[in-house]
Length: 317
Image (cartoon, rainbow, N blue to C red):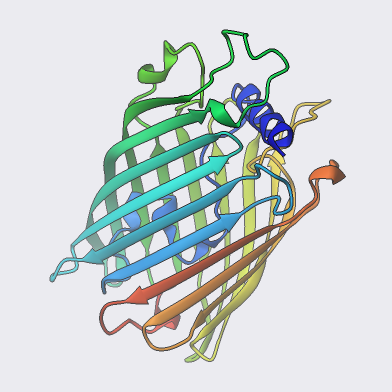
């Protein structure tokens, strides 16, 4: 098992020069705080959500992500406040992030708003050398214990929404890149990552709606990743739908497929179990050509409104 963990870690770290390094989520369609700080306060009521994601489930050392986020709007609904704790692990590497978020929105016209958001905090990159099983234990280039590196972090975003459509643009990892450049062992590439989101909400009735959307991920060093989503709201309580995820410009002969660099079909479900309790589930079916890695991914979330939630059919999320 340790050999497999080492293999995954080597593939991941060795592929840093090309692969996007942000954690992968499928349920951002229900909580865009994962991809845009300007989303903080959008739901108005205080909202807390925990999300767990396991990728390539049956493969030892496979990626696991756990996050807890919370956000709320001010009394006049102009400002939003949020916080997030995130832990992302693959093989012998782990990334942990803590961020605080502030957003401010202005009214452009009736029921149309533009929000500006900033998240600030710190990120820890860690490599656990005790998980390695080298052929030559005396090799000084192989770490034998834990290596930790810290960097400040800053994210920024814009988020527009009305009753019928929404759009978002954000950039992550604005600061802190130089903290990792001079390290002998590169645990990760702390480069800028960009997210562009666009979608519409089509009201079918008072209790149902259709929401198509697209998300584009870009870091200008690896293939552009995109999601095409289609969701339906039933009885004002159940969102169900799916997504197609793929890339543009994958290099020829590529043999290592990372969680952010693969083609997949995604099934999505989000249910209001009660007026305040929200349950979400996503299942990623991997379509990549490397069948040895074809174990699929699961993502589970639980969210809770600490107030009287606004009807979901009147919101984009």
